[in-house]
Image (cartoon, rainbow, N blue to C red; front, side):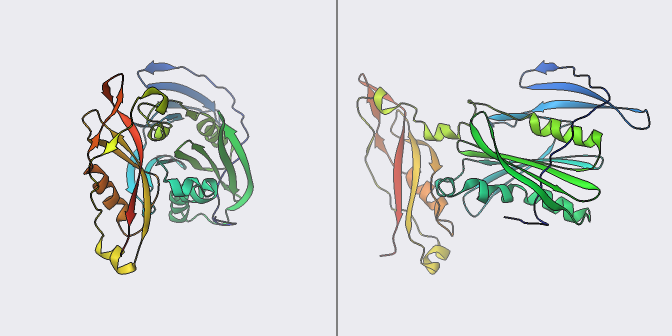
Length: 306
């Protein structure tokens, strides 16, 4: 994990001359109006929106709509990055969707929190800000989900950061801003606005872990009718990569594979080859009361150079 000059997070003092909240909800998005009094007796008005990414099981407040990019990592992580810069303050949200099984059974807070902060570190370096050091770090929780909070500051700037592991999703919030009551209050508002939902695809990445029908709800489980052999990539064969990748596959009522979720990882492109092999499988579907039903089935794909 980053130390000294690599960490970020913030404990901010919440004090505003005046705060007016006006909520206007439309579908999944809402707007809040915040009025803050500056030291020069000028009024700053910012429109805040309720931001909830598509497929995400979380939402939060931001003073505008963020830019978005996605990236597939070598470790099997799929990352969604959301960034918004307002004056000297920069807000960032990083969402790792459907965290691989291997990382989940290590120390995900230790492994993923630093990775979730990499983009804010880039902004710090790009802005030429120096001498930011970690002043506080502690474990926290939200709605029963484990998390961590960190503070990083210099004489003029601060970074607040929080992260939470919500079932199979990992969400990191970070805000870089100048020291001061107004920006500190905005940072706290951003961090404390996070809501983790028990529904939706994100906290539903647990949905990948939850079968369409449970064992108790079916009479017969799916039966595999074929076992396609996974292909080796040239690089994996060259490097001698071997092992087993565990997946969960959604078997449809027609016996075809409708969805595949990785629960493990092997290097050099073998994750993708495992998914391809599983999608070629055909099954006698699960049944309940004589009717075919969908069912999430645990499967293993073995890569062996023998």
